[in-house]
Length: 187
Image (cartoon, rainbow, N blue to C red; front, side, top):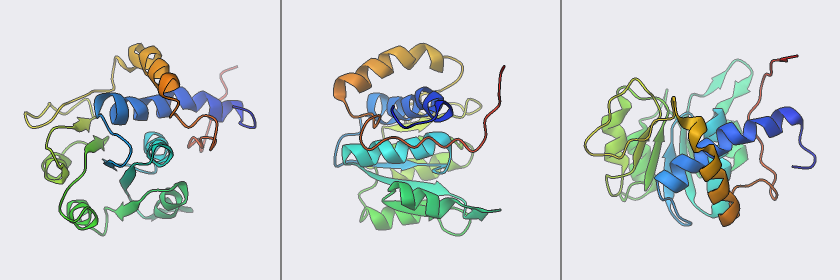
């Protein structure tokens, strides 16, 4: 996209297409729906916030509070998250229940794994669309499981084609803001 650095542009396929695949293609999130995304200040998390905002879906994200000079809660709010939960001080399952008035969310994108599984399932409205991107965790019977590694790169072309067809991937207006705090020269 015009006005974007090559570093930021290079991040779009990895983080935005990963978030698009999980939320839209696999999770079936639609305008007006609600998603819960863990690690909201991560690359995929920040992309998910922008995708949900662009399509008119609500997004609840979890992240830790301030770390060093980075206030992750403020960063997620600035991108447009509907609700930001600092998991170090609040129970995200209770916050989701309060925010959705007990209805729950349509999709959970979990990049954390571990002991989050039971609470993720409790947060779901229909109990069918929880995504675990942690490859060390076994799929649960109560959820659809989609694993990012190692075949994620094989799914980029269909995801890109779907996003272009739907014209919802925020690559034009508003311009996406990939989270690229560092880069490594390869030449």
